[in-house]
Length: 629
Image (cartoon, rainbow, N blue to C red; front, top):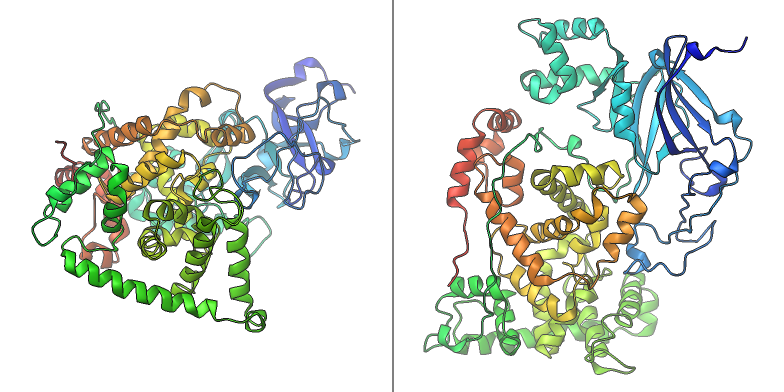
């Protein structure tokens, strides 16, 4: 019998939702474009997906490729602005006017919402989010990719019929419950979490389990660990997360609501100063630097005159101690020169036969030779063939492998060395300045990439506090991980600004003012400068990545620095900053008793919910604000 119009009601519809018959391999052959809908059939709500009915209504194809180039046609006009080794996606495919739709009726599904058990936002490859639905029978449905966004709208529409409860154990998992929460209330009663037994408190917990029941969190965790097990399964399962992505905040110890409506107040007006252009007047008769803090403040505000960089950089990077005399620096240079050439002789004396049996050294040499040949070749110091600057670049990097053999050479280190070599014009001095620079950033190059993941997480914390609307937009387009900022943080914006601008930017960062992780505030300044271009546009993950990459060499450094400093001043003037924001900026350090206490997690939560204002006020009052001459 044909269904009548009265028996069918369309509640929600979203086009451009791609069903993946094999989510591990994203190419056209296993990607089916279609519609996701919430409908009511004879009064029963259901979630449905169906393919496009004809080619004429095809959504733009979303095609990706692996680095081996399998499948699709490469867009040779797309320049990601960096080497493919760091590419989030190695090539971008051309959208096609029509997507050939196979006989895909077998993939259509209609799931009554009463049978929906869970929804999980999962990642099967870098930068791509999938929504995986699981029925109460324990059967996962094919993953869905929302190319044009819309997962939040879908969740909102679903909540008219069911309760979606985010798991405190896995932040990407949402458990589905019927609107009648009696069963859930009974479970909470058994856990003795709710003192008053009021249904309003149950609903508050469902909407925000973290803020409502911090006191009983361990019990909630145990409750949800059982709930996380799919039906008819005895072992909890979790989707493997890509190791190159930052950890999700839900996986971090403790919970903090950083978009809780904190009013930051107006952003102060900031002006830049003149560069440091005098050096001798800061030295005493024996050559000691009399006021290093004053020098750092001037460097932070205006940089350094090019003629003074060769000398000042050696202090900023720890080659010379600030309190050393002229005579002591002469002795340091002599000793460091001897040490450098001893290490250089070590790799120079390795014969070809020996190197054939040392795959690690052979691998380092191969990487260095490849990267040196393409590092800053537009700069006259490194341009042309048989350039002595290239030889020095190679030799210093090889010697660094002997200095730090555990780390060795990792792609990107040549980008850090080239400005040092350009300024010092000296092999030995550039090497020891590199070791000082690597003390600041060596964790960026470690194989585990834990430091990079942590920095991306810290950047999300700052952006959520500064501009929740911008972050929400990026997150809605599968860009909430901010993975497109990876290169910025890895080599400190080396490829985003001109060579001359990088000399200024790095010396500003080497001043270590005005706070920890100032480079993250620079990233925030850049992102906020693009909010008008991003918010309200039709950008998706692919075009956001392309837009950010195309900012290369188009950013004004002084504007970015003014913005970053203004953000810092705005943050420290706020009396209710979330604890994690203070920690990222180095403005709050817990006492040793707090760190060692078993209740440290609960203590952190208490700070957030009850005494955050006092903690922030105390921290902000002790924060160092640079003074301006």
